Length: 321
Image (cartoon, rainbow, N blue to C red):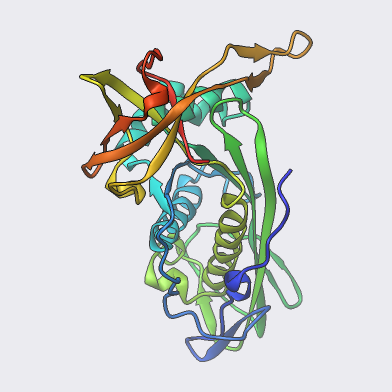
């Protein structure tokens, strides 16, 4: 649906890290990862909900730390790009609890739509860990969480994550991507204790599995940044009072006084009679409006002359042309 775009960030990679007496390499080792920096961004920020990653890799079934750890790493990196408002963790926790996502695994578009609407997100990011293991010279070793150490001359770690960007209004998948990464080590011993494999810790980051995880997350961020450009920004009317429009987007969305927005009347939701899927709606443009007052999480705008006589209501859409 959206064309792939090649931008400055397409070269994000990770380099060798020393582990014990050995070395760890990622497949691509052009520059050491010491905390990435991103160019300044002044455009509108989209509100995004990152759903808890599922664990589908063999050997980690039932262990929530892997999925939760990767989710937290991704959220942190998306915040650092300064291009998103991330739905707060406690809000998502309430949504996850109410929708029983842990049990459903977000397998239906309908569940995802309700989740996004409750979270107030422009779209959702859903992920599943599909690979998370070691292979050693002389035989394969699937990662486990039993205490102990394995001494081998060479080890390779594999990480794979499937990611989808989902429209919170229709459940349509905007785009999907498989991020995979591999890291190798030679020499030394690497402990396979549970403490050393808590995703997101400094100890974990220095292992081959940690390096591969970091590279996979970097690839996911690149994918999201590219696709984000083609997904429309939107907000909603909180209310229309005293000739002023109250909007649920403010300074934290990079809006400012003088910005011109467009008010749309949401059309009837179109449901496919064959599949029951939400196909979207035909929204009707009402008029333009200019922001005259702004706070962190909301703003007030003055409707243009064309808006006079128009019925503007709570829930109407706000878009950028």
